[in-house]
Image (cartoon, rainbow, N blue to C red):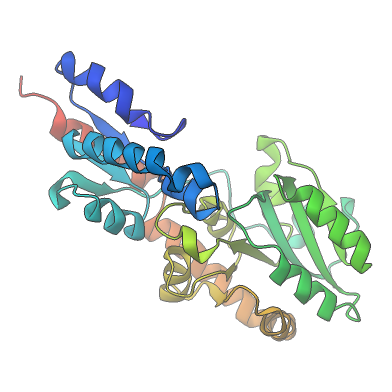
Length: 304
């Protein structure tokens, strides 16, 4: 089994595995070099990048199965010449037994971070990198400066963390609260601090990357505010399951209006949060994903 960390691992190791007569399964978390090209790296769009794509495609075509984490990724892999019957979609997952919806009154982190029960908190948890958009949420925070009970909580790090800190100071955004990555054993608490979580993905990366933070957010019973393509992978999931809303990148005023609307209708927030947890329980639980993996491996094993 070859996973895409590091990228293109299936190319050199696939040759060795085939020489040994191994059954090969590729597990794609992201698509390279397309991701690098979409992020503006010139090498990925060069002749070398083209050669790497051809080698990658050949390695996928020769594998017994290629596992993808979303429908858009499945469509792209099929377009690369991989037979449909050799593509299996198994979403990523979280520890949905440990991460459970938690009331603010029973969450010590909320008070520890200076948040009151009256505050409406829009949160982000995890890595903030080049694949994500920052200007839309900053624009919304600036538009809502007058509402001192609306807070923007960022938990984590990433390449854009420093940019975020600079922008917060430059714009005088006292409503933005920055916290570092939290210990894994505290994740069930930190994910339940915000009223709503925001997720972002640049549209040109749809089908190449899928932010897996979606599963922890939904397990915590929190609605998802997706900043990106309404027709993208997460946009589709959020809309189909009624577990949040999608705002296009750049629509800061729309986002600010949506946040105000949600703040004024707590019952709507509760309903979306419940549907988010139902999505995990019925469609994206860890148990369901592991069962799919078990069946996949069992079917690939030679008969005794």
